[in-house]
Image 1 (tube, rainbow, N blue to C red):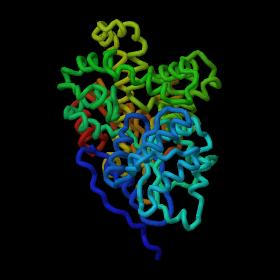
Image 2 (image 1 turned 135 degrees about the vertical axis):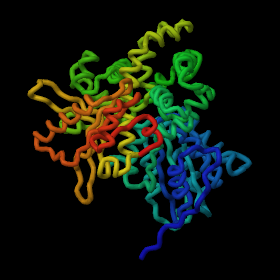
Image 3 (image 1 turned 30 degrees about the horizontal axis):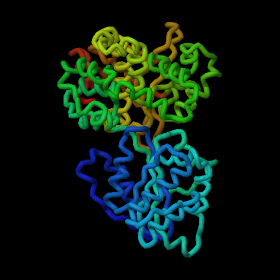
Image 4 (image 1 turned 30 degrees about the vertical axis):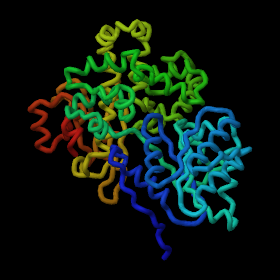
Length: 497
């Protein structure tokens, strides 16, 4: 039996919130034994803490960390040589003439031990040196004795998701070369509430609907300005994201401008605005933008590749897909901030704008966001006994009702496994942020289950579920106590299973 690779256990830094899994994967890669170089890739949308993780890794291991900047090829080589000189205390910096010499310089840092060599913002380097991935592939592929005596654990990091996603794709020179492909995601909604020190679940949902789980938004972007209870939320919105003096106000614009693949920015903004205001199908988005569906297929693909849009199949009609904005701040910007840009620029209009935007915020931002949190809860936090099986796929869907000549939208659809049987419809659920749910909602779900059964779908194990941001009537609670429904309120969403 082959021996397992040996890794050193490195304790997570005390000032690092969450990220235990990411830290474990990074330290395992950085300290892995074995001859020769290893390649790892770290990616994720901006502001998620990738650089913080990698700087902490370099500090914990004595590794080399270099953050590239937007520069010409010649300046990039010079800056890298100076960074290596500072790291090695060399009397004079090396002057690599090209990237072949630069890679030789980087590999030489790990001549006698495993050492992480970290290049942050790698896409900046490739922009003026497009052959760099091929040169790196060639360097990694060398199998000479001298080469195997070097042990760099080379980590390439970047926030341009379209570029980083293609770095290890089948057509890339680096395909099959990486031993680590780590995506640093936003904090989960429960972790985000803890990070923002918010204990009230209703306030947690409202805040998450604006800033999501991006760690940097609390520290750097609002200077630790946290809503001081539910009554402070409106004022907090006005003094942060609606305030032109705060960087959070213009962050959504920056996220788009930082993506190199987004060329016709006006079109991409219009597409995102269409999704933010309730259009989730390609046809609906095209109609809102005023283009043909074929005209927006490329923008949709690019936005998905950049990690700004997600797309998922309809639970009951696999030929239909639903698009949603991945970053809550971008949805908030396009639904609330962008339409009022001129008023907000006057710097005295935040309160007026926010009062006028209340309906839009609650119906187009908070409502859909609450539905997504409910789907996340079902996928990540619900125990198997909650729905009588293990949730595997959680989505939403539409069920036609021919007799009533309508279509019923289902907010939370759970397929899962019972024993060895997979793909079983475990639950259909409705989510209401602003309504106290009653037995009429349960009757609607039962009707939908009947429609699905009439289509030949096995609903034997299907449980109706009601998700509410306000609560449930005594009659509905009595039905749940009798095993006729599953109820999920805000306390359960944030702390229960």
